[in-house]
Length: 314
Image (cartoon, rainbow, N blue to C red):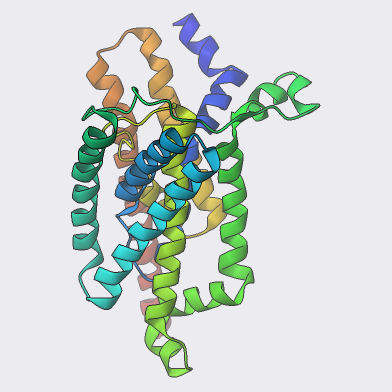
């Protein structure tokens, strides 16, 4: 128990929280962009999975990290484009489309593994490339702060920059204004000359690219290979983080870090030698608990608001 407490109270534990929260941050930002455009995007997990695989395969066969990154990003954009086509153009429900695309991603990723890596569960036989670890000058030598902030993978720093980028996109650019207008009331946006379908398609393609970065971090940063179903439902956790953060980039980031804390706690608690099944389910149980609490809080808030409105009418 003393070893467990010393671990969770250390600077290294905060480092782990940031590290495991990285793919959730990307997923939650993708969910935020989609939601702002008025689309519930549950395809994020499948998009992350496909980008994680394609990034590894392209980097392994070309021995180019840049081409691997571009391959992963393009895969994410294509997945976002598919969702946009079926939902926006064909008017299929986004949830149904998301389920179908996630199932496709799980099956097709295994098929590609067999074809290009000779293994249906992993690409460990391939010599794929990884994104570098960044040691920040001066900061790395500062006790505690250096341990927490320095030494992360490149994509971890990109995740926090993405939060800033999403905020600027949504609230400080003409495209962001159009995305919010379409998401809040697309009929009104159409009446002033905007094309809601075009804006939604652009938003979903951007969300696909952001999702892809989370997937590539898992296979080319967190580890250096692809494994079957390696996203571990992080895409869905990102959607939950966005729901808790109510589409506010800062609050969504904090929610993603909370889920990162849950994952880091589950990793560290292995010291207590609890059954592996209990440890594996902990992050998801915590996710459910947080969602239930958030839902109850919103219900109480809505009820109080309704009572105030009724009292005002009286």
